[in-house]
Length: 365
Ligand SMILES: CC(C)(COP(=O)(O)OP(=O)(O)OC[C@H]1O[C@@H](n2cnc3c(N)ncnc32)[C@H](O)[C@@H]1OP(=O)(O)O)[C@@H](O)C(=O)NCCC(=O)NCCS
Image 1 (spheres, rainbow, N blue to C red):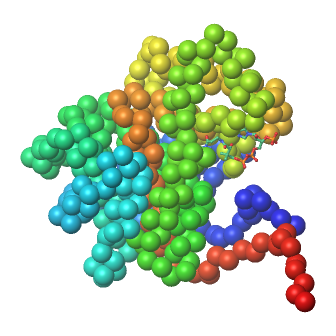
Image 2 (image 1 turned 90 degrees about the vertical axis):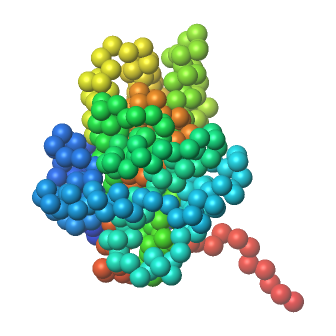
Image 3 (image 1 turned 180 degrees about the vertical axis):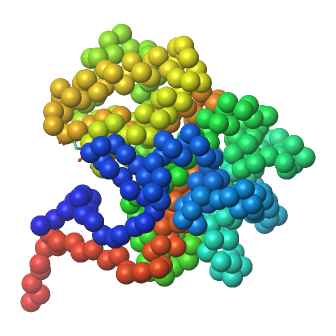
């Protein structure tokens, strides 16, 4: 029996998160995501994943300061970022920079210190690369007091972060911080299972995250929305796409067989933020048409809206450049990856599935 794409196969135990795909529930270390987004921040949830408990005030202050202290890029990293080809995409920049980190120093740090460092520098890599491309200088006086999410937003947009935008990004980042054995997390665990280091595991994960079927989906959602907005007959357009075998970005999920709870939470956040908004109306309309068409044309496949659909909308609402959508997803998911790498090490068995040979058997004379 062959399980293509390892569909439906359980290959490890985890205490990090639980996905109930039939009932649309996602839990991190015992807490429902809706409780966490309403009552806690991204940094608190990062603490929860790494340490297993939510932080008290003192622990939160400690982590906030650790992230601030570790986000400074070294001169050699800055130099590398400047040297990379001007048209290299941000995900490739991120994986190159992470892969270049000095493992001699890194491996002397504890795994938690490495996790904090990898999480802290993601916004700096993105922001610094952007400043090089657009030829401006980041004012470190303005950024030094900002907390992790404010700093991130500043680095993404080079603007003073608006509180509503900070809250929206924080919500998005909590909702995408962790999600079981998705493709990129699996890839980080496979690398960790060879007893390779955390830098290598995160580098593998970034490469996996880049693909349009995983972290690259939000950019595809924007393209879809723009195409629908300029079409004469949106129902016909969506039907044609489905009939020609195209995968519509922002729909379908390997585990959820109902609406992704993260999509519901993001949609609520957007409605709170935006009220009546032309673009949000377009997104909701495309969602309705697409779900209706998928129900008719892909009957019984259980395809619903996934997190990426409203992720694209929320990132657009905070004026983010679409090229930074996947790097933003990466910057939250790095917390999940590092947590999984630590969990893998606790009870390691190398991942090594098998394949069935379907090639030739040649006889030699
Ligand atoms: C996420 C995803 C890879 C899950 O894939 P999966 O569980 O392996 O499901 P499959 O690819 O086997 O699809 C099952 C059926 O549903 C269809 N389907 C699944 N997602 C679809 C989508 N987004 N649009 C159109 N059809 C879709 C497939 O074409 C297939 O149809 P078939 O049975 O006629 O061949 C897939 O739904 C997808 O590519 N979605 C779009 C990308 C996306 O939004 N990714 C972000 C995920 S959070």
